Length: 87
Image: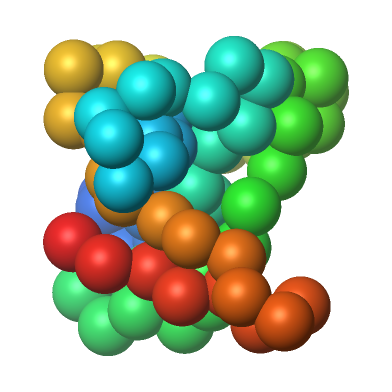
């Protein structure tokens, strides 16, 4: 899912994540915040966090749903507490 505000200046992308063996991890999403096309933060969120964030930003701020990233799962692995993201 993708939501954006201010004419696309601020963009939040949410991608499903999968393990090295292509198994999609249920209830986890990669959240990427971009400002003017530059990535600001990346983090893993739960499906309930995603739902709450999207509802809040669309209902209470000027965000619009602008895309669907559900068919673009991203690989991740967690090693020693550090999160490695590959895309």
